[in-house]
Length: 241
Image 1 (cartoon, rainbow, N blue to C red):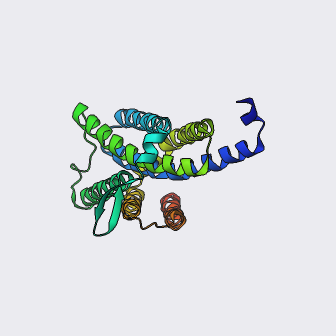
Image 2 (cartoon, rainbow, N blue to C red):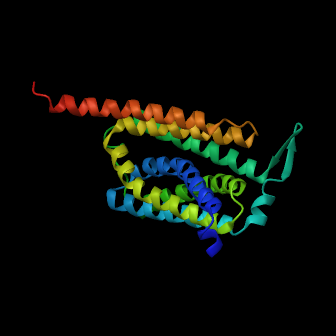
């Protein structure tokens, strides 16, 4: 442990891996922000806390099962000459779930009336939100940890990077969720991002890798444009008639 604290290579690996985990965690934060907007604020805050705690738990659990996790990358199914591992199958299933969920939410936003668009309450709604968070947490955690294994060899460094990234996700998730819920156009943009991320997960499952840099650039550019739209709308409201 002392050797790790005094090793420049270990610190470089920690910083690099932490940055990567934060970037990969953006998907989680977007999904949480959208999914909790359907329930009242007190429940939404609790759901975010539970969701991020589960994200951290899943990541650490997967890190502690490295041998089993590496086994998930071995082929278990072949279809028309294309081999699929359990990781591929999970990514395809998770990506399809994300596409279906985001499409359903977009349809609800576009078609629903004012009353139907209001958040639902009750234990059933809260548990349904938590169940969806668990499903997508498992998919994002698997993708995140397999990436971490490829970048660092020391388990301590990987766990430290994951914990730091999850703490930053926790701090940022509240403001992002509030901003998304207060600005309907931003929520629609976040849902479009989820469709894009779902497509990328399905493509990965079929061993067609879409460079994440392209996806995150598109997200960043669109978010910047939307930010200026929101700012312009706020300034127009403040301006005297």
